[in-house]
Image (cartoon, rainbow, N blue to C red; front, side, top):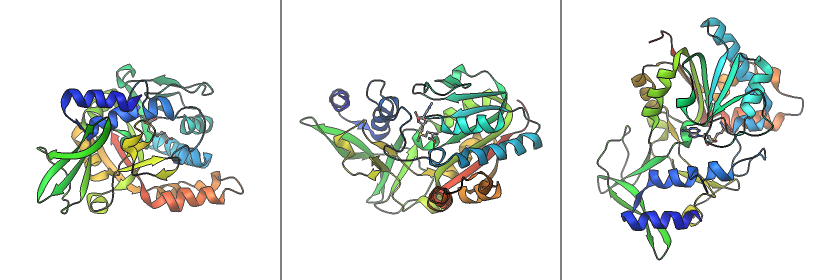
Length: 316
Ligand SMILES: C[S@@+](CC[C@H](N)C(=O)[O-])C[C@H]1O[C@@H](n2cnc3c(N)ncnc32)[C@H](O)[C@@H]1O
């Protein structure tokens, strides 16, 4: 079981950092949440994503990609990061019939998904001109939890006693990109910078579009960023069942923008998902009767989710 694996690792090291805990829980090859639990075509086990809510999401995105690739004279070659169960891919391929569509995803390709290349690592992607798209990808990276306690930054670690896991903190030596108040917590995603640097090498020229929940520093600081979801409910006792819950945090779009710029991209625009979908004609793609779906995409998710667009205009 995953808990025993974690306990063994902690016994060797004394504790594990929270990002290591998230990495094991989500991506352990045998028992990880994404690698083993959230597979198949079954919808909404612990949460529902926008492409799973309604086909109108993917069709609206496709409509936008058609317009933008024409404006930027880009070929319709698409790389989707963390494509999950393939719903967004299916809807974009059916609408646009692109030259190629590749999904980068650590878990297994769903058998029903046709006409799509599937890779597990960016290393397998040949340099290309086109589009990079993702939904809820950057929030699925491992993250540290940094707290301010008595004026000092400390990071959450996981220890064990008699086989049971518990949280503790140790001094944090690094920096965080937002100011936080006493007793507040900041979630620092690990690995974005390295990933975006490699992505910049693979994308010779193109458009980058990502959807995720979160906001700028001032919008997310003070809010509870770290959350664990199980069976569509927020849970507090996630240490009791590692690998069984989704562990996630709000995306800091200031930090993501600066990581993109540092990698070489030009950040074009950050907007609400609701504005993006309305500007790009979601009403044309909603089926009659899809009122709850429209409300979910435009109201519930619409303000919480943002869309960040960047470009790489000159090939380097
Ligand atoms: C929250 S899910 C979103 C899935 C899908 N985009 C959707 O909207 O339904 C995040 C996905 O990203 C994948 N993922 C996260 N980090 C990855 C990485 N570095 N390489 C490949 N896949 C990754 C996970 O396996 C997971 O399927």
